[in-house]
Length: 247
Ligand code: MG
Image (tube, rainbow, N blue to C red; front, top):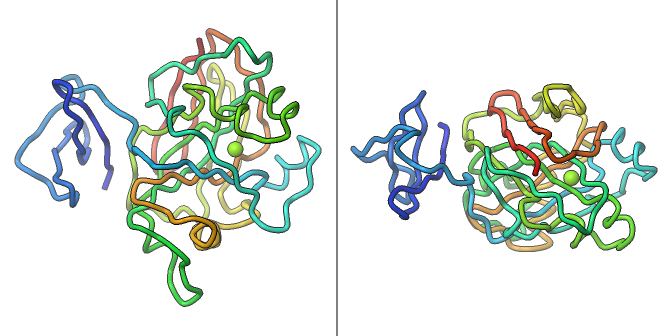
């Protein structure tokens, strides 16, 4: 199932995408009789989280390219939800930074409240599905501040979408990022230092995860600078492509 969020006449809705058809859903993700087509609605980011939890240095080659060691336990930081934009919306380069970079990632969308997931529980039962995310980063500010908050949370620095795919085994899918059609990042989720079930359980023991919350699972090697006029695309095999111009 492919879940999207949209707005029509100023009212948000949730839909299931089947080809070009958007079937409107109720809060329990059950289809109603109402049907729209993409040109009849404004698409929204597919999730509206209380928080975006990010995992840093979760691919060994990416940790190495920035001169860092692989952490012994997941390195977590938060991105402000106000940074979220949909596929198609523009990433803005803030005047405070000279080096804004893409980080293409697989994102987990939480389906039900998760707190202290037990060792005997399957963490994936708390997951609604997966989407693409660009963990846009002002690298110069991240380095200068040490804390990640400012460099990661400028408005427009969290493109997510286009849809949430609920039926996908993400243990070994390809994650690619292109700038103007040229491949810059090309990894597989099987290369993660801490795999997805481990991350969901671990994070649930640090903070309560709420329905709709987003976990960005880290980026493969190949991060590079984006400039105004560029178009950045993050593609996760089996989900689709998140496409954002840069302004
Ligand atoms: Mg990242």
